Amino acid sequence: MDFLLTLFYILLFVVFLSILIMVHEAGHLVAAKAFDVYCFEYSIGFGPKIFSRKRKNGETAFSLRAIPLGGYVSMYGETDMVPEGMVIDEKRSLNHIKRWKRCIILVAGVTMNALIAILIFFIAETACVKHEYFAYQPVVAEESIAYDAGLRNDDLISFNESYLESYPEYLVVDDDGVIVETNQRVAAVLTRQLQSKDDLAWNNHLVFIKVDEEVIIDSDHQVSLEEASKKEEHFSFTIETKIKENNKWVKDKEVDITIAALRTASTYYLEETGISIYRNDFHNNFGQAFKATFDDFGQGATAIVRGIGSLFTGKAEVGGIIAVGFTTSNTLKNFGIYEFLTLWGIISVNLAIVNLLPFPGLDGWQLLVTVIEGVTRKEIPAKVKGIVSLVGILILLGLMIALIVKDLIMFVF
Image (cartoon, rainbow, N blue to C red; front, side):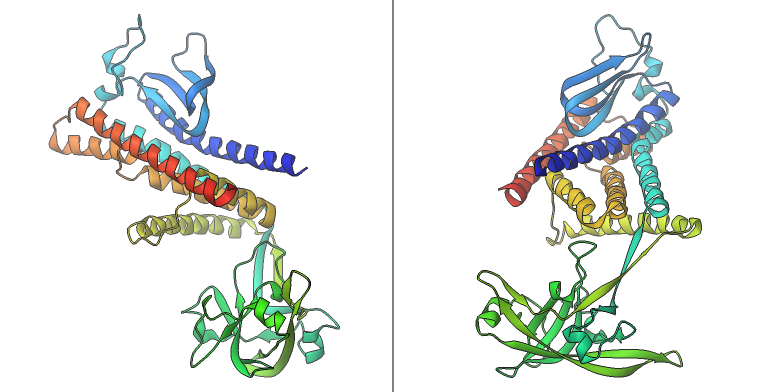
């Protein structure tokens, strides 16, 4: 069963990736044909042909190749090679149409990726259940430690707001807790990263940080649960709740929680508090979906631009095609179809922006060359363009292989 499920995720990933590639290359093809440029082949994938077909009296062969990591449209003018016995009017060459038309053909692919991203976002926002998570609003199990201490579902937890700017991935419940046995001061902290849409129990996110004069949230200061369990230590902390009066939040009550670090033969864990994060499931109406679609697009584009910028600061974590496959599969498995579709929308935005970069081998490079030639009114020698493009493609291919090796080491071995 696990093998079939894994195979399903692999096939689903290949299908979605192929759709994005097909749409991108279809943009180039449609624009080229609109300007009567002769197109030899529209190919999905690289390497040996698996399937190829040309309509009777048609011009363009539609091909599927063995390596589904890209695609291309082969146009007359990009290469001097013409099939033997074929005569094509020079007017139908990519190099003989006006430069503004060439620019349109070059940006048509990324434009289609942007449009398909908007479509994916819109489908996700209109058709799928969305989830909102509210750590501030507790779900309290009856006959639990938290319930017996006085915490209720209607309470609103007051996290320590002063730490949010410094530690946006964490919520500080109490920075003045203690380990009961040693009176060591600790901060009770909730991590904000969910592993799945059902990963709501506080115990999956609650950690304790050693505190001297200030709270420093990092692994060096985190109390080892294993050591605490071996010593049978108890953690005591206070949850403050708030209510609203005259549009201002005021303290309502304090709930004192004490839980033990427990262990089985091989597992170390915290005693259940009985508190879970509240999850709200809802559907957008049309207006909300329309607005959310473009919010998603803007946020996706901004994140990608920041990611590209981080490459130059050395802070980026770069993954390859295998990492993308694992991420999309885990997203579908753990968070559902809405997050899965949204992620593919972001990937499509990613393809659009990356392809616009002026790097040899990408659409952005050819666009830059076309603009430079138009401004200077001088053609760059075809041999020079060919060599530069080849070097760029080899660098991209090398980077792709390096990332695949990195992904294999991280996810497989």
